[in-house]
Length: 380
Image (cartoon, rainbow, N blue to C red; front, side, top):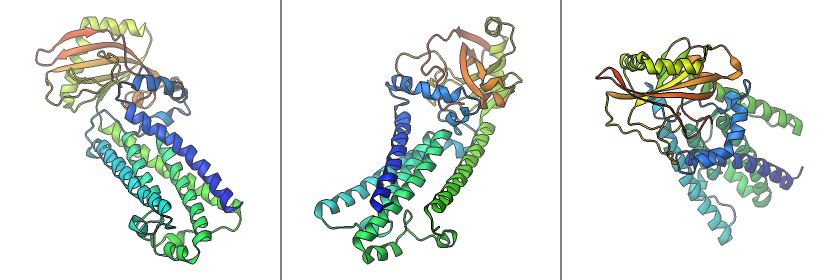
């Protein structure tokens, strides 16, 4: 295969992955906009296909939450860290792009100055930083897999471009390569010891495939550990058949108290019994301040727009409990925290407002219209 043909093949692979990743970023930035419901109507068939599968469902799960507070400082900061990295990566890409196009328009040949005097591919490095930031803000397993795929696509594209530059600029570019890093502004001391160049194309393919599988395994393993940390850091209460997740920080005793008040109301008891229809079912329920609105949770308040509302000066005595029947993927037998990890769909039953100071239920509402229906979104 010639260098030109190889480059075209790699670029097709790269742009295919890039198009998917663009849609991932698009999903995140549109999720809280007035267009989000329309946008998700396009995504829904694909997401639901994965979500309903006992084998593939985990791909559309989130390994860190988007809207739920936890007791882990590491988990709570991932949105901020992701936003910073995404913005910095995008700005760095713009700087590199300006250098490239200036040299092209001015006919100055290969770019080796500015940020290119430290890194041979600062634009790809910037995309990696930006992509990692988006991954942190929108941490689906399938996004993680595509991010890792993008890393390998960038590497292949960079190698192909370097072969073209060597053929075009000769020794000057070879010398430039010897004093710069591919994606990092420094040489990795042990890099040469860990790499070798197989002779046949098939051997190269096998080596790259093995590396890709290993990196995927490590990445998914880290994501699962973060998911475990998240689940264990939730403000939550579990029974055999129910999981109660508080979106806001709350003391354990207070959380149990809010739940007990809601479950002691006779009208609520009847509504839950009618929903169960004498069957043994599971529940995934949410507790949040009465003044908060989180569109990812089935609740009243949807009016065609889907902005989050989480004022920090909320009334600490007023909470609402959202009861949802939970459909478990593959009808597995799960309990407690396992309900959160294996849920396929939620069917809203009732929204109950509780006054903690007065120890009573003050409002009971059926949930008629919800923002995202059962589309998998970033809330536990």
